Picture 1: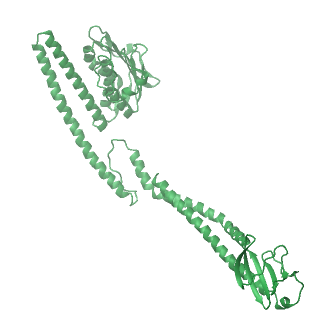
Picture 2: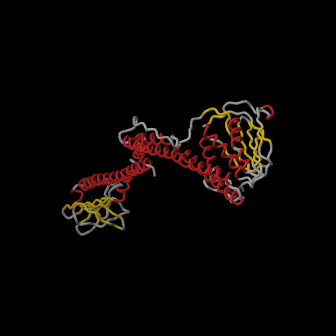
Length: 462
């Protein structure tokens, strides 16, 4: 439960309990006041009967004219227990000898009795306590509507006060929620109440320490990149030197395995460093206007040697002109990883096609291959880190599509996986919002370069 809801719950609950106690106290006060008033009234009724009337001989059980009342019952009794006068024929209470006030129960109902002794007679006035209680409850209920109105106004006032008191916390939370995950800028302390300023200062201190830690981490990544790549490059050079000095086929095969192992290790190290740099903001995130046509074309050229080593027919079917706003380094990594992933998971002798088309004002990049494809139930899992399908001759690191997804998420790109209807393998598509650029042009009108791909491949126009 939030602080706001907790405060409102406790304050409104306390207000409701206090209001209930107030109603009970009001009822008790009204009841005590009514008791005093009606007791005085009973005394006045008893005293209003003149002694001459009491002493005068009357017939028994006679009515006492002039003293009829809905609230009180007046009776006059002789010393021998005979009822001389009464004001109510329906209710006859027995005589009580104790002078003054008393409370008795008669036929299951409570009565208030006042007795006045005059010589040989008793003047007895009785009143039902149930009637008094009903009057007190009626008075209390009459005060209920103003009390409910007061409760409503107080609830609104309390809610408004709590909201205004927590405004600084809400402002601080909105400032933090609007930040990107890698933003470590200091939080402004002005505009916050004195209770929130210590929290803002503590957060600023934490952000400062995190900034120092991340800076140290980025330096470590840069150093690790150099330290890891240098010995691997040296190993590759040494393997080439050894290759030139070997003669037997068996030794050559062993050396080829060593070279492939070094290449796979180098690729894995590069992918791991890319993931780490993406997570820690070590890559340049500044957006610029990028010629997507030129970027895709260069990526295909850069990966032709990898396609040659895997006997893959890599080419570009159509590359329309389009300009998009993105971080250049990250977008280059995205395109190269898509093509690299397709080449590594396509069996030897297969085909990988790259296309860039402008469709309805958007740039659509597609990479298709003739590989084994990915079942529908596994297409979400392939974006997980180190997830690799159990396919033959696959040299992927399990990080390529995870890197692609992260870059696409940071740029707000739409990423899709489906079957390639033309090549029978997997088709990966990325949709870009075009910022500047003409509509789609036929491939014949675009500048193209013919690159000779290895034997058993084709001429690729890029």
